[in-house]
Length: 258
Image (cartoon, rainbow, N blue to C red; front, side, top):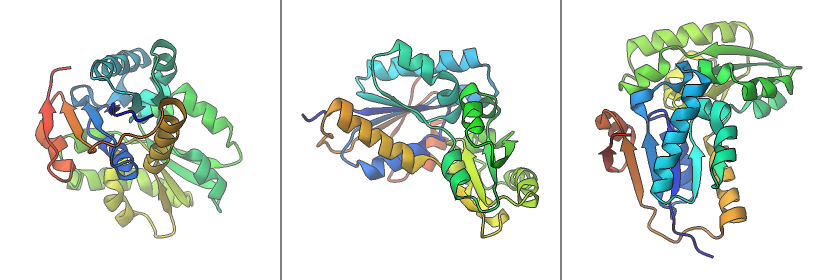
């Protein structure tokens, strides 16, 4: 069975486009709809109740656009809201969580670092993951200010460099050999991060794993992939130029109040 309905994605802003990139690369024929809730970014500073409410709002908008599956392309929304979304809506949801497991399993120093939002690091789901890897020392760091700088188009600013150095140096001093990026915005900082980290420290993000899981669930629960053109629509509720600037191939960005 061929299903040409689009894949829906949402994030607290432009960061989830790192997940969209991985999905589009793996399944180029699938149509996609992406919601950037930049007006409410970052989710990581909000309460669990606010995150759940925003996630439901985004879900309902995507459902009104007839999507067949929803990718919660935001670590904070996944760790705080996906349980509620799955219980309330009859559509498959794909979440994104920090890739602690591969880092912990492959660490030679038994010490890894994670850079994430406050909302992710304080979530019940994340702390359950930590309990499963109690034999690994995990250096947690909240990325205060990083999402705001990315959302304002200041990825390569001196302020960004200073913040990253202050967050990463204690991890380097603690002898980490893996850095887990626990926010979908952070892959856009990898070029900056690589300039700061020693070469032996590996950086892990979740994009490829999320894309593969999305493909798997489509095949198992929905049917065959689309044979469409791979049309992609991007919506944002503020500052479309920033979202457009991070996308390649001049994809149109539609400003919409949601």
